[in-house]
Amino acid sequence: MRVLLLGPFEVRDDEDRPLRIAGVRVRAARHGTRPGRARRCARRRDLGRPPDNSANALQALVSRVRRAVGSARVEGLAAGYRLVIDPVEVDVVRFERLAAVGRGSDDLVALREAEALWRGPALTELSELRFAADAAVRLDELRLGAAEHRLGLEVAAGNDVLDEVRVLAEAHPLTERIQGLLIRALYAAGRQADALAAFFRSAHTIGTEDRRGYDNLVAPADRAREALGADAFTTAFESTAGLRPTAAIEFLLSQSI
Image (tube, rainbow, N blue to C red; front, side, top):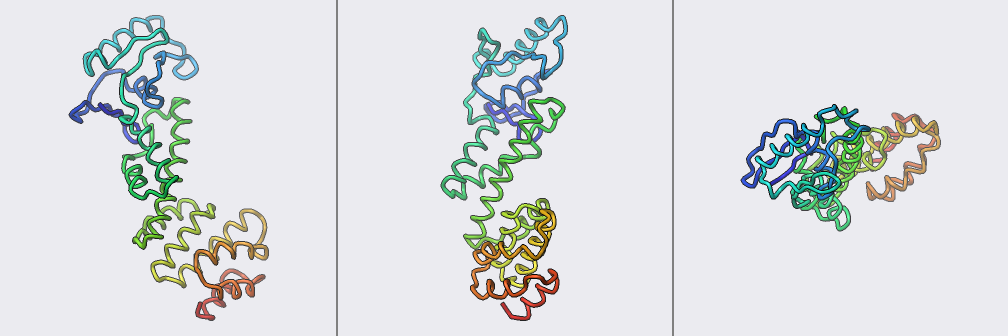
């Protein structure tokens, strides 16, 4: 059986067929975010004040779940009920483990598998609940980190992922690491002029946002040197200090770097 939360909520049986259980969506999602732990199925801070018939409603829900997944899958404990499932059968857990392995050991295969688990925004159908909204933010951050790391490995391996990198860079114009990834991807694709233009565009945007001004943007030269791999670039870049971004780019291109 699998519990899917990275996209539309689904529970699938051992033959990968979707299970339809009325009333189970919110409660199963809670179990899915922390598998293997007993939970009470109604908590005031997340779901509001339980109705007077909450105990009967809970028993009815548990009965429906047991009929759908088998009695052995639902374990009653003093603290509530627990869905008995291998944690890796919850896509959230599988993603987190694969992403950790991939980022920790530069495992491109693991990172690709981790990203493939996403079918849409996490917990989107439960966003009005605080526990789900907080979890979704955390998962989105992990997804971004995994994507950024994977694309960096793809570029280093010589794979053409420029279109993917462009989309990521457009969505995060103030994130220096991602803008640096775009520069590396452009340069790797043989588009040196576009790489230089992207560097100055992002440096100016980030510098303006930080209120440092363009004159103080010589510091990113070290990152550009690593991204573009040319000693001449550093010399030329330093000579453009004080120029407007457009004039600086024109100067650098005139040097045929």
